[in-house]
Length: 157
Image (tube, rainbow, N blue to C red; front, side, top):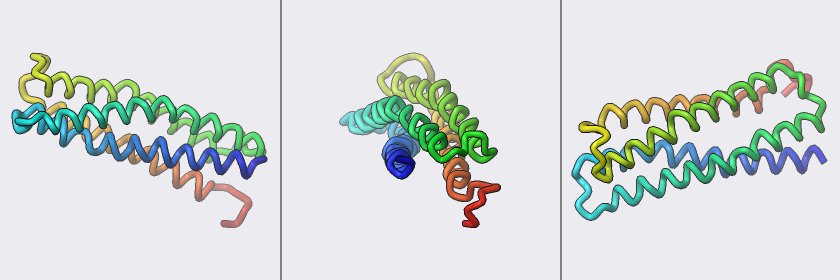
């Protein structure tokens, strides 16, 4: 059963976190282009809106990643291992960052691109969003490394 749970956990992580990582990384460029008046046919605005929907949708689906991860950890008997606890803490930090900073930042840039008077120059917001997305991505890279290396593991790998 542990192999099935681990397979589902890894597959869901790749599909959801990978999709969020790519879409969130691409978003600022298109939102900035749309907000900067360099989008006469509204193509960049449409792409930015799609990337935001991808991030939102996969963020909800991403809840399955820690759920299957915890089920896998329980089946393997590693719930109290330091690497797993560190991974869970980082996962919570990434989720909070996504929910409180990245997705709202995307929403604000979308509003700016649609002519909302919320902000005059969208570049500072796009720069901040790019930085926050980079931090989100680095957190997930660390989680992946922890999952592979598993410091203190007795597997010898």
